[in-house]
Image 1 (tube, rainbow, N blue to C red):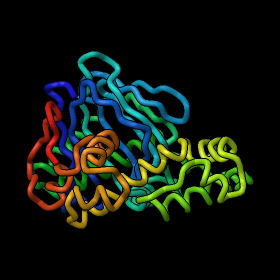
Image 2 (cartoon, helix red, strand yellow):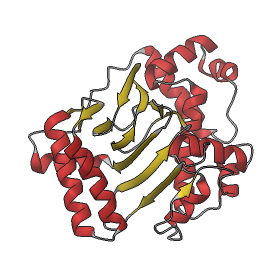
Image 3 (spheres, rainbow, N blue to C red):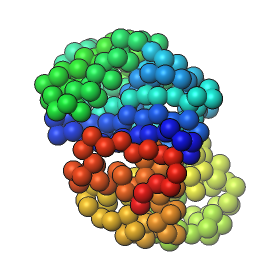
Length: 288
């Protein structure tokens, strides 16, 4: 990674159910991945480019990036100097509670526009992060709710309903269940297809259509999600790598950083309370 890149991914007790990120990236490229939470990211400098639902999106200073839970997307710089941004990752229950109190949206609310040009909302995102860094729970919670409410009013809507399960979708769901069961030692595509009574290319097509990525990419994403849970519980990165099926800790480091934005060691230190106000510089070799 280029010198000058830095990131901090953390949680604040005053904002339960929300992950926080401050970052500046230059050469970093995010692999296609999903989040269990919403992504609400305010762009401060540069341009971020990302692919979502088969369309390339551009976010410039003053824009807010909005990604719904479970939506596969990528991320990279759109200009040579990269991009600087702050992001909030509120869980779906929190967003639904805010929507029920401040909007007419009911059920499972989400965002209908992936990029919104709203400098005020982008500033609110950064103000939430600043308040969290300063330990001001009242301000952080208030500003978060103001930001989410504003964005729901401008770009909110019900999350898309899942289509009726086709035969291909049912096949993909069965394949996903098998991959979850055998995460540490997954079968090959051919073996997986044989077990499901189909052909490799039919399975690949069904899986990609249903989940937005091929099985191997989904498995990497799932491994990183599980790795986060183990790191949150205090497990060491080397133990986590073996538990989720990565060849070694170096492979965990690479894939974790390509999806989460920081290496697992830095992520774990924040969760254990040892990374207070620490920003990880991404140039050079990442810490374990």
